[in-house]
Image 1: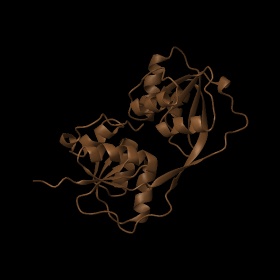
Image 2: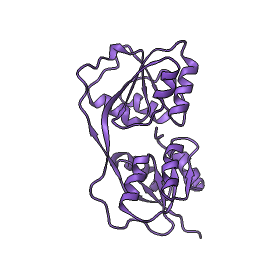
Image 3: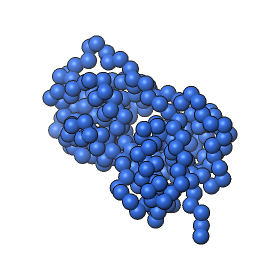
Image 4: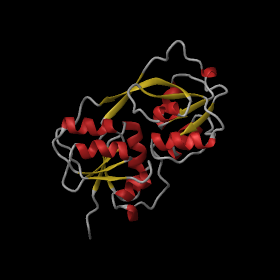
Length: 239
């Protein structure tokens, strides 16, 4: 009987736990190896939800940070990048007005622009350092865009000496997790990236990289070639 590979999960500790429970229940071996942590940032004094028509969230962490900061969306309509972000909105009692299923910031912006009637005032809550999308596409289309930095993604300070074993598959869900990994260890095991942005970072670092077709655990497992083992509950989406 073939030995099932071990999955190394690299997300923030609490989000790793959700995926680890699902994978373990499916009979897979899991190593929880959180490589990043989130540190909240102060909300600017001039912030006012009433100044925006839309608030677009590109990750569940963005939703959580907005909620934990005590912010209220007010009359602004909300939309999330994909199923996981929509679920995060629902978990705090907010409604995703569009239910878009996109893979990255470019697709998110394009799908959003395809359904709104005219450009508006858009808020993008998220990390201090972020990619140029979806801001660039929205701005080009005439939207008035403000990014709101609510947290910083930082590397975990204490890491084990040598966590990787032969046959392991690492699940990377952000470029930050890739950068922390390569800063700590020389190993370059096979990996699965949650999207093309993360995949580009992993390939550049020398990883043999497969890419999930959508930003969720089910797609990550399929990209790893382990779909037959995932027989339990529907997994949580990532972004």
